[in-house]
Image (cartoon, rainbow, N blue to C red; front, side, top):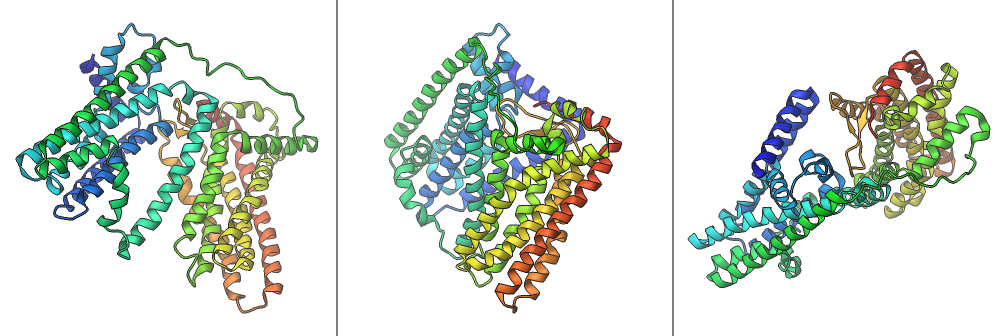
Length: 528
């Protein structure tokens, strides 16, 4: 069974490489990134040799890899079809051989190999002597096996939850802090390292409790073996092996339950009758109501808005408390407008087959304009107060709250530019998307992998050019009285942003009206 599922995994990878250019690019990029992670981790662990805090840093790295295997499958579940128990439910397979086969398939691929190679850096940086080297190799193998077993247990246990609406909400709650922590890590760690405030000794306090976790047991087993305590090293490895056995037993039970329990995630939910807001204002109002409701009901929309706020904070954290605080305020506002455009640049593809029903009401250019303007109204009702609040918070952190009005001006221009570009890209660069089980974020269908990156580059460049006049006016009028210039700048930016959004609606509606059947076909190809 193990050999068969490993062969299936390799065959699926080969078939994906033959399927489309996008699959090839994705596989090559993923493999290169895995290689870089392996080389970087190996080099980092190797450099710890002879340092006083080597075991503490090793413990942190081992624990970081374990948490990566624990968290990432929750937000990217189903990317590997051989790991989803739902795909094997109809086959007459015994649970234990199937579990062994799934474990072997999970250990096959670039990323598991990258984990092994990277963590083997402890053989240079932490292990001493022949016995220490042997224990280091065994500890790395058990560490990777622990990570894989933990990931399989979690994803199998939550397989049906992650396919439901509650599962999507759970994934949203996970995506937001993960993205926030990533941005904080990317902003703070390089700066603290450059300033000399982050050294190996900084991890001493963290190791006091991380050492009792399974990854900490693996790291300290190497330290014990290298310092002449073979009994303690063997006991730590035995404890780690026992944890792996318990996790494997729990995984087998969860797998058996997943294979014999009926899936109820597709049962219909109760529908409560209520009038749509804005529906009295015709087609534009009805579409605005639809888009507005989905901003709070669709977990993906909540994720997008949260990420926009996180990006605003991350782009301003390095300069908000310096004399160049105005750069933080204006830069965060510009990035927010750009990412609003990026996240909504494929609304037809993200609507999926439901757009074909909406398209029956789009009988001409005027109706198509109502579609795009209704969407912009809904997004603007969320974007304007949200970005304004975030901007004034950033200005308050900089201790110049009044300058928040300057950021608000860039917010308004950026929102208008972002909505305009998203409308045009929706009409001219629409592509089908698909969702995998438990993954809240849609991915491009095969053959369209380059479209999101191209759309993101267009949004970033276009919004930067569009908000440049507002930034220039803000800088050139810096010596004028604030009471006179700020209201005029905000009012002018609001009119300018509205004009940009309306121009985007006009251009996008003219493009979409000519190719409405093609857009319907793209929407129908989306699998949501």
